[in-house]
Image (tube, rainbow over all chains, first blue to last red):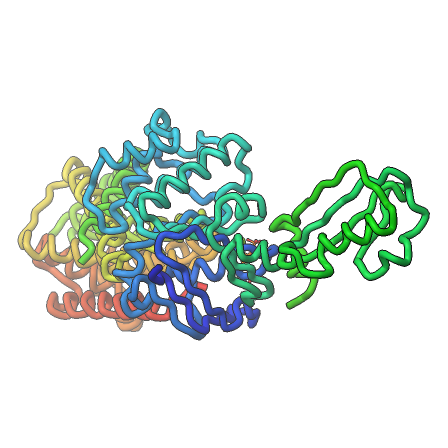
Length: 311
Length: 253
Ligand SMILES: Nc1ncnc2c1ncn2[C@@H]1O[C@H](COP(=O)(O)OP(=O)(O)OP(=O)(O)O)[C@@H](O)[C@H]1O
Ligand SMILES: [Mg+2]
């Protein structure tokens, strides 16, 4: 897949002297959904703001579809739609007036049919003549999305799109994002809900303290860094782990009635000291079990683990 | 040129103007009428003619300028300060628009509104005193130049201000005194020589003098000088705006 956004060696030092980004390198591929994860203050909004032209970079270079965001800002910016994190709207204007403004700002000729389609898609059509101040928080969030989509962007940035949005609406937004992706739009989203990244993203980037810690295919990341646990429910509780089983990484739980075996996802495919060996050893030691199940760590566990390991 | 953007911003700003039109018109019309009642009728009847013109007529160009200046300043400064205040400026900054386009649309909208108001005030004045416009072309030129220049100045103030107090400060502290001391209500040669010299440092003197000349053919300073000074002031504002955009001053972190 071709690269649509290229961030090279990007740093940002704010006027206060605070370094919000440290030599960030990142490639976003055409047509993907990319999730940017990171704790509060990691630099997600700063990164997005620089790409969109709202914040000036201190060092480094960004290109969008080959256009330098500073030298060629017109070409670069006209491809991008941005849904900001904050709910900032023109309180006294109507829904229709603001989406019309957004479309014009990005150099597109007026097209009421397209605006109608976007507003309908976001369930805002019946509010089109309402003043924005009369909308609920969730409606305002949708309006910000409508503004970004009003000018038919190729790339859509969603900075925490589902913050303060109820579960049903969140599902609707996810569906909208998928539809956009299938129509060829590249989507970059930041989120605090890891389930969102897990559900939506093709690739995941983790940022902390202004540094990109990891960028990986989501499935690959979960395979590489994910852990699996095998839980065996024993017929007879054990007081301690028998010496014959010491070489496996085992724990006893539930007053000795459960035996838990933790292993890397990578090792799942039968290494010699893997599950097969464990089961052999159990049989040899005469330990029987009634049931077993496995669990896999979520992206959230991986994320927390990455931040904790302080890389 | 991103024509669609210029059009969109201009229409958006004019829609705001339309929404608040009544209140924007009512207060200047009332205050202008008051000036005529007080200065034109009550006091003016005891003031001899100035350069052969009745006092009521004499003050008309100054009054129009006074409204034009304050309206241009407040429209333009508010127009750009408000999106900064609410945060909606993010969209303008992320849009593929050039600085020239932003200025054309914002300053254009502010100037349009203040010229509209200037015309209304002129019409109101016509109800009270006889009006005579000797050089209509020059009158319109001065009107346009002044509206654009002060809309630019307002734009600068709107960007510089980071709270509502500052937004009010410049018009209140600087522009209003300059206008009152700029010969709206008197001819410069009515002042003692020292103050005549001091007045020449007041840019508003040139605007009002030139504007009055276009009405009655009388001026405190030569009309060429008035035009030159107005252009100079315009150039200074353009330079400051160019610098603001070049450096991102108070617009971009
Ligand atoms: N204009 C600014 N001036 C100085 N420091 C700033 C400015 N904007 C952001 N910062 C700092 O830069 C750091 C990164 O902020 P940023 O908004 O990019 O974080 P974020 O990852 O989006 O966080 P969140 O998840 O809370 O939205 C923070 O420490 C913040 O305080
Ligand atoms: Mg943020």
